[in-house]
Image (cartoon, rainbow, N blue to C red):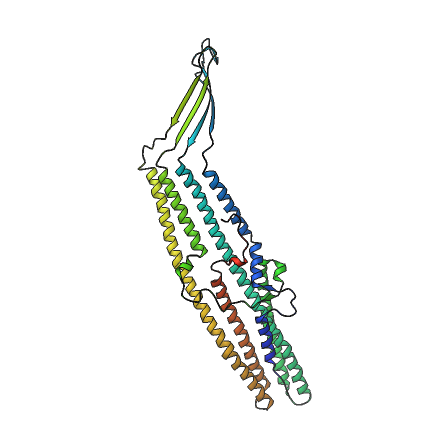
Length: 428
């Protein structure tokens, strides 16, 4: 009896999936396109663009003088006697109209405008963080879909081949060249592969649902195409502190530090009072002269030690808090990046070992078991077991490559890739 194990065809099918889009896919979804779609429809980015616009509009308003105050009134109106409630008979009664203008110092107006500009910078830093998160999470979802699809193709190929083995074993049994146990063994192998296919299908549906969360249901139905460039990353060497400082989390805290520093300088400037000037024109009865009044108002800061100085100290404490948080975040991100870099480099080594050593060894074992079965020195169950081990080796290699590619995605999109990003509104 001759039963073949065309594992090379299954390996070739998996390799074709890993190397590029299948020929039957007319409109594949690449990783870059998936990220571009996800960025384009992210409402988080739209919201942060709106916040940036709001902060910059407020910055312009904060740099202006306050609106003047129109003042209307009646002074010295008699309440009793012959001139009761008369606006013209008593020489002291005046109808008054005036304007008051508060004049904050130019330094304060500039600092108030700068404070909102710092808010805009902080929102932009948070936008970079959101952009990096969208690109990273989209990449992770796309990689899960890509490799799960490759696993499904591999298992599906093996099911078809094992069904042919069932037919061959059944023919051999009917012709007296094989045993019924061989038929049952081949059928059990098909059932086992079908169960594995069900598991892979569940994973594939889950991966598709997660990808749809980022790119929409229509785009998620398209077949993923690659290959993903997981074998290289800008962080392949020593982790640079300058590179880490471009991390969006650190940029956001840095923007907060600048905002708190501006508030501290504004609190310091508030130790010098703002003046208000006022001019009013008062009209009396026709027998009396009209009056012009001019005045200046100056707040008296009686207790700077317990008010203005305390405000300055509070703002400086916020600056120190942000600095400490920045240093802690820098250490945390450095440890995170080093861990991801270690996982990625170790994964690359393991993938190479699987592909260069483990998978070829499993193939050789399956071929040896098949040869032993053909020469009557082994049974079909042993040959099928060796075949399953070979399939397992291929699936383990794909799983390991997927895990390594996920580490690559987390490393590669620590900082957003502006090549797949839509430009932010109101960016300087």
